[in-house]
Every structure is written in C-alpha cells, then in structure tokens.
Amino acid sequence: MTYSDRKSVWGWALYDWANSAFATTVMAGFFPVFFKQYWSAGADVNLSTAQLALGNSLAGIAMALLAPVLGAAADRSAATRRLLLLFAYLGVLATAALYWVERGCWQWAIVLYALGVVGFSGANVFYDALLPSVAPPERLDAVSSLGYALGYLGGGLLFLVNVLMATRPEWFGIADGAAAVRLAFVSVALWWGGFTLFTLAWVPEPGAGQARPGVFRAVADGLRELRGTVARLRSYRPAVVFLAAYWCYIDGVDTIIRMAVDYGLSLGFPASDLIVALLIVQFVGFPAAIAFGRMGQRLGPRRAIFIGIAVYMGVTVWGTAMSSRVEFYGMAVVIGLVQGGVQALSRSYYARLIPADKPAEFFGFYNMLGKFAAVVGPALVGAVGLAARALLMPEAPTADELALVGRTAARWGIASILILFAAGAVLLGRVTEPPPPGGCAAAPPRGC
Image 1 (spheres, rainbow, N blue to C red):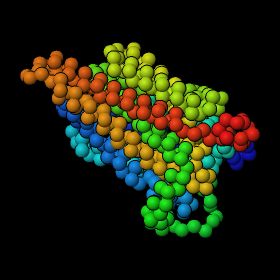
Image 2 (tube, helix red, strand yellow; image 1 turned 135 degrees about the vertical axis):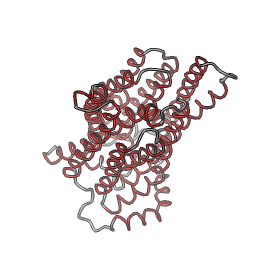
Image 3 (cartoon, rainbow, N blue to C red; image 1 turned 180 degrees about the vertical axis):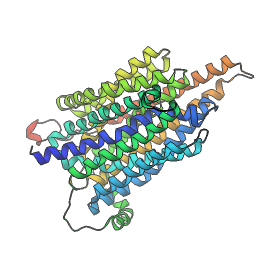
Image 4 (cartoon, rainbow, N blue to C red; image 1 turned 90 degrees about the horizontal axis):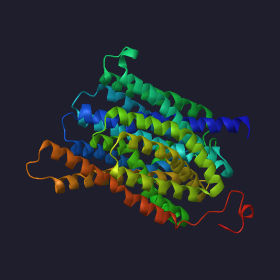
C-alpha cells in the first residue's frame, strides 16, 4: 500500500473518530440523561422515554426517505465528499445549538436532537460509500474495523473529558454540572467539525475529473430514477436478503445504543453509573473492533456477525433481569466486545454484495434500512413500555407501586428487542455467500 493509499485510509477512518463524539456524548450519553432530568424535569419516566423515542423515530423517518436519493445523487455528481460535508455540518450546528435550550423546553431539545441525528446519519451515507474507494476487496473488513475502532477511541476520549467536566465542573472553572453538560455539546460540535476536515483533505473524490451533472441536477435525476435503482437492487438478490436481515438486527443494536441509558434511569440507577458503563463500552470497543475484524477475516464476516447477534440476544435477556450496577458494568463489557465488530463487518460484508460502480446508490439503501430500523426499535420499546404500564397500573397506586410498575414496564420494553435479533439471524442465514476476495480460486468451491 502506497503512502497515498495509507493517507486515504486514515483520512477515511478519521471521520469515525470525528463523528463518534456525537454518537457517544450526545446520542448514548448526555442527551438521554439531560433530557430526562433537565429538559423534561418532573415528567413521568415512561412518558419522557416515549418522547425520546419519538425524536429518534422522526429523525429515522427523515433519513430513511432521503438516503436512497442522496446516494444516487452522489454517484451521479461525484459530490460524495461535498454531501458528507453538508450533512456533517448540519449535525455540528444542531449539536452546538443545544447549548441555548432552556430548562423544561423539551420540544426544542427534541427538534435540535432530531436535526443532529439527520446530519449524523446523512453524512454516514456518504462516509460508508467511500469505503470501496479507499480499500481493496481483501482489506474491506480490516479498514471498516479500523474506522469503528478509531471511533470508539476518539468518542471515548472526548466523552471522558466531558464526564469529568460534568462531575468535576470546578476543575474547569464551570459553574455547575448543568452548565458543563451544555458546554459538552459545544465541545462535540468543535470535535466533529474539526476532524471532519482531515477526511475532506485526505480522501479523494471517487470519479473526480469525469464530466458529471451538478449536485442539484443529480438530486433531481436521482428522484426520477429511484424506481430504476430499486429494480437494479432487486437483481442483486443476496444484497436484498442481507438488507432485510440487517434491517432487523441492526435495529436491535441501535436501539440498545440509543435507549440503554434511558433504560438504566427507568430502573433507578444513578446517572453516574450509567456514564461509567458507557465509558467501559468505548474503551473495550476500541481493541475489540479490530479483533472482531480479524475474526471476520478468519471465520468469514457472516459467521462473525452471527456470533455478535447471539451475544446481543444473551445481553437482552440478561438486561430484563438486571438489578445491580455491577451487572450493568458487566453488560457494558460484553456489549463493547461485539458492538463495533457487528457494525464494521456488516458494512464490509455488504460492500462485497454490491456493484463497484454505484457504491453511494447502494449504500443509500443500506443506510435507509438502518434508519427505518431506528424508527421501529425505539418506537417498539416506548410503545411496549407504555402498554405494559397501562396494563399493570393498579387503581390509586402508592409511590412504591408506581415505581415498581415503571421498572417492570421498562423491562418489558427492552425485552421486545429480542424479536428483532431473532428475525435478523433467520434472514442472515438465507444470504448466499459471495465469492472470497481474489475469486473462486482463493477458496474453491464454497461460495462459487
């Protein structure tokens, strides 16, 4: 690999380092806690959970509708990097704006959070689409895993600083914990926006120099040709079956990422314990993502994904009976071992199933289904929790009974994720294995 190739790989992977600050500090960490304790202060825990799930679902719907069109536009216009920049900085600005949302204004918090998720998710369409242009087929698993590993490390380092700001504000000359959390959102915006510039500088635009239409013309063409894109996708049956499987199991993964802290709060765990668990996931996830990528190269990515799904199903069952913070820490270690690996190998496995000349178009559908999954999972958890609460609530409950019902309803909600993992595993088993990198001669006759 030449110096230029290595620079492109590191430039690509550094975007994961950049945007994981949003995924960690905002989506998984401070936003759920701050939303419950500051922007929704005094609201019922199950109601605030449903409101947070609504914000995730609205953002997921928006991106699910936009992703295929944007992917087709990127392929037609050779504007993958520019569109990445546009969506990344939408997320950056929305995240920074959370600093100005006042206590009790949960509606504004949800709107800005949803815009941040749209920016984060939209940029990922184009980030993922750049993977085949920076990594040869035999390096897809390793490079994809490198991105997730750097994401865990970068997101974890900034999150650690943010946690210290929130728990020891006097060390930083900050008035109190609430002011520190609001400043943490600003730090995420600066981190995300700053490191994105390395990706833009070091990763070349695929297809640059070819005569292609502008971005707006390409978007219009993409809208008109969406039906043709669907027809082309249908001709790649293994990719279609994989997308159906991915839709299910990544929904479970994303729902755990987005709702774990909220779930812990509903069970009555202190916010400080939940933040420590998130830090454990980040720093375990850094080496584990690289190791999982190597396991994918040895066993095959599909087998490695199956292992990850099985672990997640075990964690979900464990979570429904969890009662102590030690158990929460143990679950964090186990999740950290598989989370990045499942995400990385899903991306590299899908890259093997699609045509090399239309990566953004096909990754548009990949991200579309991921975002529709992010609609179903949190909404399922919220709806099941509210339904269980209504079913279990006694007449004129005492304070203790009310707390017990809330905890039990939260457990029912998290248990519903098992359906998604089970369906994903069944569908993944129906995917036809692609030939190995290097062709059938590399490993005859399996997959050929």
